[in-house]
Amino acid sequence: MKKIEAIIRPETLEPLKEALIRAKVNGITINQVFGCGNQLGWTEYVRGNTIIMNTLSKIEVTLVVPDDKLEEIIDVITSVSETGEVGDGKIFISEVMDCIRIRTKERGEIAL
Image (cartoon, rainbow, N blue to C red; front, side, top):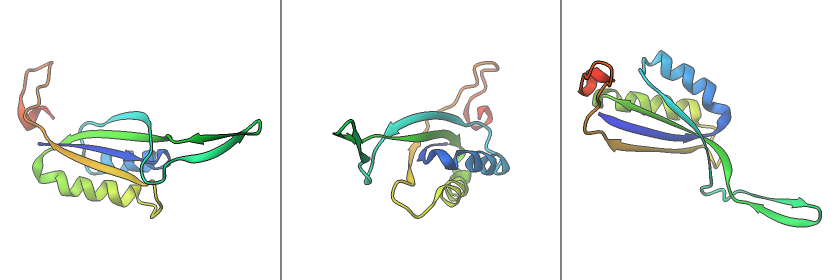
């Protein structure tokens, strides 16, 4: 099993959710986060003072998928979330050792 953490633009969340549902992803966790990457934020002027805003609003989508669905889900995320501009986001992938459904105590991929 693999854990996918995708940091995306807020405006791509709804289309991504719909695409993941069509791809039969069983569970999705969504968080609103703030951060910056290569675009390094922006500059604003408030009451004559320069303020550097170095964090931007982003969405973090986390899901765990079986190994055989990993590439399919990566393709879904990249195709829906790509605008071609700086700030489209990143995808992080890590190994998941186990998954346990608390209610039934099922383990492994069946618990997803």
